[in-house]
Every structure is written in C-alpha cells, then in structure tokens.
Image (cartoon, rainbow, N blue to C red):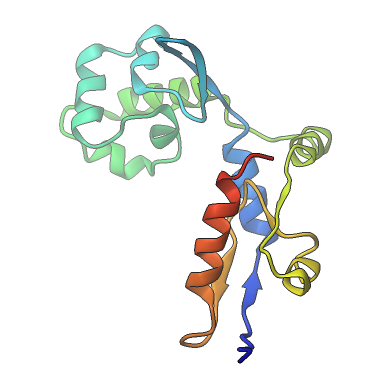
Length: 166
C-alpha cells in the first residue's frame, strides 16, 4: 500500500538575508582543545571599551548576556534598568555596536558565504527536485501541511541524514 503525502515547504529570502547578517560577526572563544568560533561575543568584552563592571553586572542581571543583545535592544528597555542613565546607555550601545561589528555586508561577502552552504537530501527524489537538491543548510525552512501528511517523518529523516558522514 503506497501512501501519498503533500508537504509544502516555504523558505523566505528575507529570513535568509537576516540570518546571514547576524552570522557576519564571529567571536573566538578559547576552549580546552583549541579555539572555537561562535556567532556572538560576551558582554564582558565591553569592559575593554571602558564600560564599568557594575554597569555590566546590571545588564547581566537584566538578561543581556551578549554584545549583540545590547546592540539590538530598544533604548527604552536599557533605560528601564535601574542605575543606567541616558549617557551611560548611549555609551553602552555604542561600545556594543563597535565590539560586535554590526553593519552592512557587501554582496561579494554574502555570495562567498552562500557558496559554503550545501543541500541535505530528504530521501524523496521528487521533493529534492522541487527544493533544488534538498533542504538548504544554514537556513530556516518552514514545513507545514495537513494532519498526518508526513511532516514529522520528514524531520526525523533529515535529522538522521544530517548526522551521516558526507
């Protein structure tokens, strides 16, 4: 008995572009066995930019643990933290933006990053053909469909295929 299922896959170009912009900055964190690259920088690095340790503790207590979280936070949210004045908030935001190197990415840089992406085969030839070779790595893919059409089975298959050696 063969069962046919229709799975609709939606991938948004806007989400891909914003994901690439956030991946543009990479911090290096020391690990026991060498260096590991992570897509964030800890808020403690702002102390090198002249931010007071007490102010950093206030930010941590308020839930801001990375420079990116401070740089993307709304100014009014930072001003609501007790003990931070307008001038301190401006200085903290400026230091966070400089330390995380948030900014524009040129088209050439974006294309070179996109070349490192690859496709993960789903195991279904026709679906892979519709997706242009499979599900794209380093991106968010939304899968939706009717009840019992195979969404969970597809996700389980992809999780197994992603762990196989290339």
